Image 1 (cartoon, chains in turn orange, purple):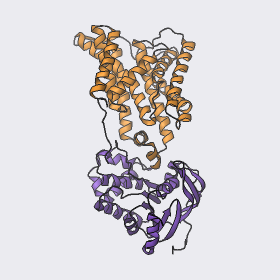
Image 2: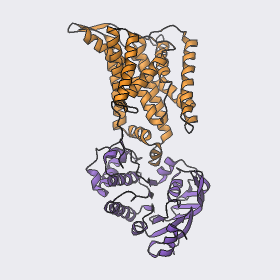
Image 3: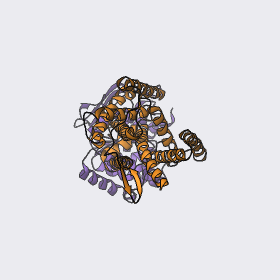
Image 4: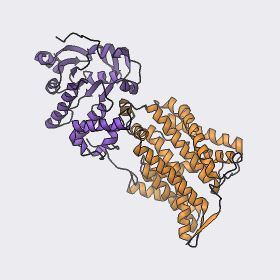
Length: 290
Length: 240
């Protein structure tokens, strides 16, 4: 019974991580740029929910659309300020600008909210539900449901709509996308908005059970990076599966041993995966046919 | 000689100069194409054929000169806006979107709504029946010939007035190259203006009515395809 409860908690944590990794990999694919601010954007989303909560005295789920919208706007600003001016420069320029963005977000959050941990409201009541003798936190189930809906929505848009096709074409070959009439710069802006919105949603989902501090982003970007590496660099399903595996590993091992041991074991497992399958679980060594 | 331009040209290039890889690849090229014309752009490797097509499309910036499409100056327009104005491009090496299905590769290049898009996809499948059987396959799984058909079909999805093709027979077997050029002839016959860059002169001349010869970034001959002097052709390819 405990195993099942741990499994649900692990999947809930993994679902939130998956949103972080998904946003990270979408920007990575569209721009070939590693957005090192992604973890700090999760933190910003969490604190935004904390700041909005007193003004909207409703369950956290009501804050979600506004959080997503405001974070998408922040994503546009990030793209305009930290990516577009450097897009034709060596990639290290974007690395540094996104790291700088993260530092600005961290310090801005510390000034506005102070260093102490904050909690966003639960998505619904914050209680527990009993299913066949199993007591599960309602928040865990809500996190899983919300993350699943957001991931499914991203998949649907990318697979079924013209916007999604344009976003994918931009990610696969931006020059050819232009030559097919796709407004690539607009697609990059949309991708940053989407990636940041998903980071913000993850922030709201995580900030109730796991609290949020201005420095929480460093740990989250590391998780997203590992998820994308395990899943296969650039693979969208790989990022989601990688995030779930990390969370299940974290929750499972830390329940038996401890969190630091779980983290150490996670890095060791990452090394084993990279040695055994360098392209990651979902990556392909070669995809292009002559 | 080339027929006189009875109407305003669809494409008008004037004194176009462009650099590629640090070297000047086009030296003041001037060229006009009438609507409905099929023109072969011939020359040896490094003559500037690909650079000319890419500069017309805006993928390589012009350092001097002007490009006009149907009387409008498009020299400073972004590539995607030139495409929306009526340029279609089939790149060297095909460059289909490898992780997207055949249908998605086609649909992404259309600026139209769902119903018109579907009609245009069917039109491409009529032109290339081999693609109709692979509609859900990811593009990287296609053979080279099928990828080339897909690249041509993708360019047609934008309903171009001027189709630019860069080495469409490169890397294909003679049979497949023949099929691709049969399609090029059909496209030109329907009234789309075609400018096809090729190293295989015989194949390109079979599908066009006019030949433009480039050598070291300059036009050295411009005239009817059926009376291209062999000596001039040899010189353009082999020097001398």
